[in-house]
Length: 127
Image 1 (tube, one colour):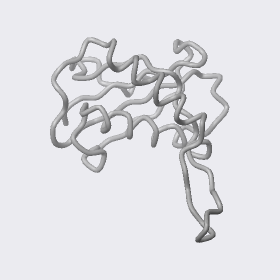
Image 2: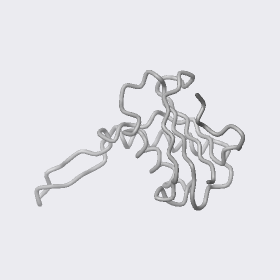
Image 3: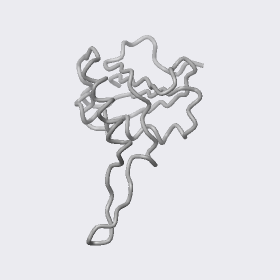
C-alpha cells in the first residue's frame, strides 16, 4: 500500500540520518533550582549530521503555510514511529524548510524496507 503522494513532486526531499527517539532527545538535570532539561549528546550529534545533509541537498522552495510531511525509516527500526517525528519536524523548521510545524496538516510515518539502516527519508509537500 502506497500512501505517499507520487503524482506531486515533493518541495523538500531529504535523505537524513534516522532521527533519535523523542526519549533520547532530552535529559533531566538537577541545577541549583532542582530541575531542568537539556539536549542530550546523541541529539546534538544527530542535529549536526542532519544539518550537513540538509545543506548538501538540492533545495527547492520552502513550504509556506499548510503542509504534508512524510517520514520513512528502515523497516528494522525498533522504536515507535511517532517517537521519531519530533526531531524530524524540528529539523525542517530550524532550517526554514517549513514555516512552523504547527502548520503540518498531515504527518505520514512509515517503515520502509527500501530505506538503508541508520537513515531516513523526509519529504514535504504543500497541502
